[in-house]
Length: 246
Image (cartoon, rainbow, N blue to C red):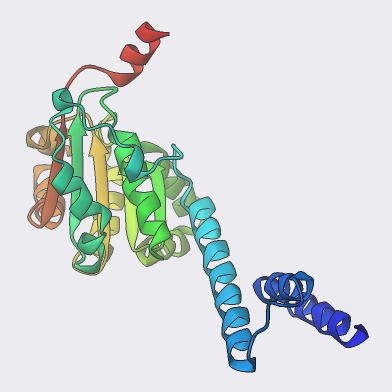
């Protein structure tokens, strides 16, 4: 009918894509499939809701910029990795984000720290949280450049808005004074309000030396470590193992 086509066109113009798809499906269904007005309205609204939610998740995943397309369902719980499945499932529930707690993931090179961090971040996006993932050194370099052109306050505010900030490859490079101060700003802005996940191969006991200035290091670590969930990965490099199996 012309009226139905006009309705479909209006839905598309109003960007009600889920509703448009559902209504077209109803129109193309066999004649014996009948809906009461309230059933039809409920189906159209449900489909629009699901469509918008799925698009929001896709947008959140793009904005997060994860290193890996990872999921908690694909995590390897090989006994040699010393991964506590119960702990990972608790983290995957993202209660730590609701409670503004932090997560620290440590382990040798290639043990899957970045994948695990990406999987937890991916799960957070799916649950509707804002997440941003970055290599720590790269992020601090970008903030230094922002300081130079006067945009650092905007960039720091953007980081502060993230429900979960993931700092990967923490401690690969020693911190200079400007990096220490920027890290302090980031952590101070988030302390008690947002969650931070830090992943690195350097043991937590050596972070004081990596940060460099013990006064600043003490202030930073006091805000990070005390309420943190710690995941320590063990075992051989997964990358090396996969290469040997090829």
